[in-house]
Picture 1: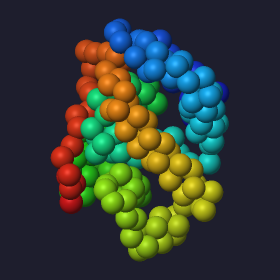
Picture 2: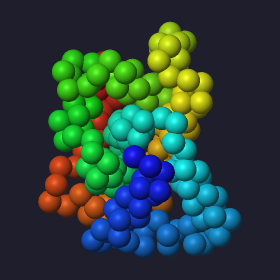
Picture 3: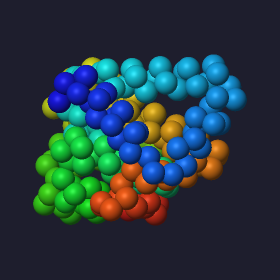
Picture 4: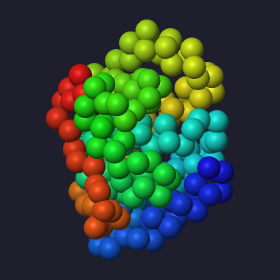
Length: 183
């Protein structure tokens, strides 16, 4: 999926908000510098195109589930559907290691997201090495940035009380996970 198409997809999903539209902008508007930095980083992530967008969506979804961000899960479910990630793959996230729906690379990416999203965040060297055997350093940097930002989003949204906005109303929506799910 092209970068412009991904940006358009995200904007279309944002326009679907059915409620609580102003939760996050209302908070960020209080600190314009923060709002600008947030928007800039979001745009930077969307403009990176070296890593398969489906891998980024799966990694971000796993991170959102681990940090229990209901807003992130709501919008992430809608974005995943629009970007072509199957519901079966999203349903497989909590028990990804045993799933036949996911490829070996997808499982490694999800394991990476799980390691980065756990507290403390510890990514085993062998996992990073396995990923580097199939991804370039550029792709791994893009993946790490996506997961780290999803953790930031989730924790910021939790701290500010940002509520789900109904992006995935009437469709499948991922649920938060408990610690260690998938292991």
